[in-house]
Image (cartoon, rainbow, N blue to C red; front, side, top):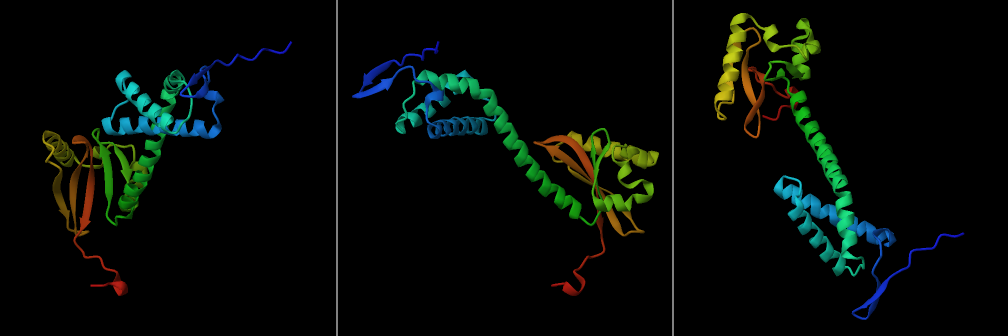
Length: 228
């Protein structure tokens, strides 16, 4: 026997005969897409402005804003269906937002990495355990006789004598003491005519690591393309 379809319950409101037990799944695809977009738009707006996931009060506000847009677009769907839809999709909304942020962050990292990689002088980045986590191509080449990129993952302290190791530790302690402590000149390499600095790396003021920056005193030009 064929299964009976659920009976539609209608009610006349403002001269219109509306189905009171209409489901979100019954909407046209264009209507679903619009509502899905509005829900995500309001969710993203709240998280971006408040830097936190919405609580129950914020959920209520988001849904009300979406309902206003639905009513304005003259899409008929019982309010309860939108409440149910929002709460069932909330975890997916956060994952979608996290994925967007990750993609955006990755694109930013590509820019930052390009800046470091194009630097003609050595840049060696370390975490607070003094582990080398990145070396730009110039550093890999400059330290090739010591292992080049094989130094990544090793302690920077192992590459220095006891006196230098102690100075590195003192500089990092100085970085940690105050947010305004961010760069220290360490020494001048006469053979290569370059100055060496240690520079603090911070995330919202918190010290997360440091890098060793080399700056040559010899002026670099564009040779025959030099404009000055």
